[in-house]
Amino acid sequence: MRFPLRGAVIAAAIAVLSGTQAFADTRAAEPPTADTASGHRSVDVQLLSLTDFHGYVRPHTDAGNGTIKDAQGKSIVVGGAPYIATHLKNLRQGKRNTVTFTTGDSFSGWPPEVARLADEPTIEFLNKIGVDFSAVGNHELDISLEFLRDHMGRGKCFGQRGVDSCFTDSDGRRFRGARFDFSAANVTREGSTRPVLKPYVIKYFQGVPVGFINLTTTTTVEGSTSFQPSLDNLPLVETANTYAAELKRRGVEAIVANVHEGGTAGDVYDRCNANPTGPVIDFARQASAEIDAIVTGHWHAPFNCSIPDPEGNPRPVVEAAFHGKLINEINLKIDRRSREVIRSATVSTNHPVTRDVPADPAMVKLVDHWVAAEKGVSARQVGTITGDLTRTRDADGESTLGNVLADAERADSAGADLAVVAVAPVKGSNSLRGDLRFAKGADPADGDGKVLFGEAWNTWGYANPVVTATVKGSQIDQALEQQWQTQPDGTVRFAPLAVSGNVRFSYDVSKPVGERVTSVLIDGKPLDPARGYRLAALAYTLIGADGYSAFAGYTDAVRGSRDYEAFRAFLAKGPVSPPALDRAVAVTAAS
Image 1 (cartoon, rainbow, N blue to C red):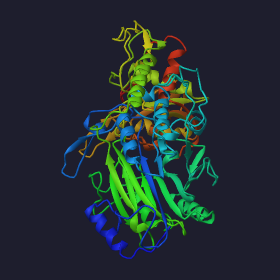
Image 2 (cartoon, helix red, strand yellow):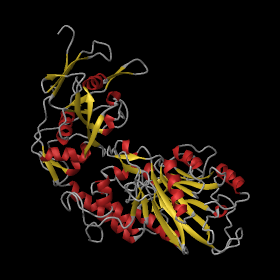
Image 3 (cartoon, rainbow, N blue to C red):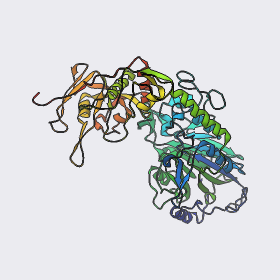
Image 4 (tube, one colour):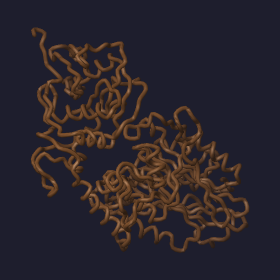
């Protein structure tokens, strides 16, 4: 909470401009058990945090994932579980009171040794480095609340043990889940205001409580990968203020907001430029003055700022980049009698996870174990094909792979009338990532016609769910028209949609853009513009992220499997043959 600061506001303004790590008078030389400003004994508490780790246990060397720039613009090689563990041990030395936490997006990562093993390597890593709790980021909800709570949190298996989940960890034990809590104050069931997880965590240090309110971006449940139509997000500021007041009623005066929402403040990892911006910066300026520090994430940005609260008192607002490049350290000094944070003594530092320290042996073992385990998982056969499934499109925009994927989407959905896949979107990401060849590949486990787990994974998807929703026939027609989009230079770009095998449509490119679709048949019947149809598509397409805005206003959305799982399930049903390319037909006015 607040404590008399004297010249701290001026110091905070200087900190924003200069990027200094101290937020006011740091009193760095004072003994840890006394504070001259209050005259009372005090308690020092160290906060250590990671954000947006995304499962990057393996040290990476590419510029995007394995380096960070210092104040001179020099690239520093950083990251990797073996080095994070060592740096944490070093930072904790001599600290009596320390807490370690994450600010969300710890898993649902992209490295194959994590993503293909149900994110269990990340949980083993977080357990071993002593994480005490975690905020829920948007990617913690990439599968479901139940997956987060029951599998990641409690170790409950899903699917086939050792195949779909509950793999053996680096110590030879079956996955048992996190040894820490996931917390989110502003994630609720649809229409409710009651959080589905603990809204905050209270830790005690020498009898003094510190409260941590954990929040996630309000875009979580409507995002593409974390699309969860059965959940809601509450607003950040109001929710933070509600729980700050509740903590205060419980006698907690020292409060930290751990917020999976971000901003930008320059690109030097331990500084703050003169004009920080972004939603979490707005949050910092508006959230209750009872909150003493704000730790952030989501935007993958590095910054170390001091921003005045609504009463003009400075407090740290920090973000520690992503993929384990930085560890943020905030040191709080808390007055033992009032239990309030002495803001003038707060110090924050973003530490680069350099690799000039010894690699932690247990973490080296962990990385090696999971990299080897991924190779075994990726070599497992998941299906059979009778010919090549490729992204190569004909003049109508059809491809064998695109058509198969539309059929896979419809098969994943219960009761969908049709399905569409954006095979060449006008913007955003393309979910079609590789061709699936009949001929044997390089993996010794492969054979002609065999589809291995890794091959299927590399062919389609980016962890997006198949969503089934109700749209009007007129919206389907409009989406098909949006395959032709006029560009700023006047040219027309063709961005075809693959449709499921029960759909046929014709078009005439001699007609104006927006009037080219001449007929649409679903199950042999003409499209009814006024009727509601159940459409299956990736959430990314449904929400318009890849350039098809026609589906806006969809209703009754139901989430299905992720793209990866939907495709594997379709392949598992039996040999898949390349489909005919006869779902889109060009016509002319004369014909």
